[in-house]
Length: 70
Image (cartoon, rainbow, N blue to C red):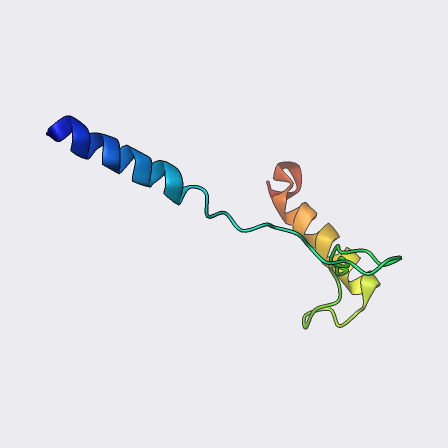
């Protein structure tokens, strides 16, 4: 009796795996489906100023430099 229940459960589990939906992305011809990357300095902090972003990177690197911190 338990073998029959086990067989029914196994069949139900196997059939439930057949419900996968297709994962197709619709793309217009000539256009990319990828998201355009944002520039790292296009936020509220730097407001598009690349020079300020580069200065902040240099300052951060200087603060992480053990020789300059000593």
